[in-house]
Image (tube, rainbow, N blue to C red; front, top):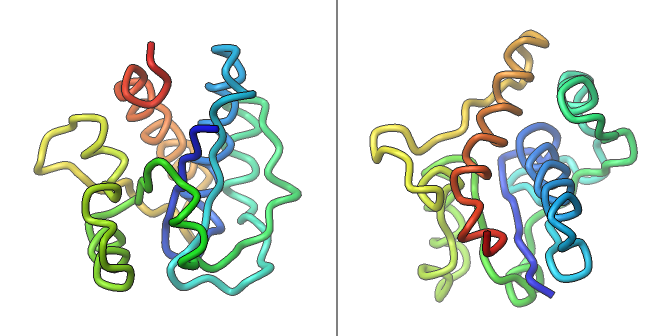
Length: 155
């Protein structure tokens, strides 16, 4: 199983959206039996649900349901099981690399992994903003995954 871990700050917006989008993309490619994503946060309130904006954005754009999501803390055991860790910002990458030595070659921002411009490596944080911002964030995540399709899924 090729496991991908998406990480953001609270695990209520960006990383759960990325997890759901990735798993749908794997399913659409017939890879759900071999590719799986999950998510965690660097500073979550464990057990918090996905934000209403994240739930609405992935529902309207992709028909996905985040209502069962429960935030969780990034732990060392998570890192042992994954092929790659894709964080939402450079700051998240630094936190992971600092907190978990030896992960340098498997932790990237999603946009870095997708080959985006080095001046544009962070996925915008929609927390506490408008529904339109959540939708823009979900599309930013989707677009980066599409760009990294060959690396993520072998297309």
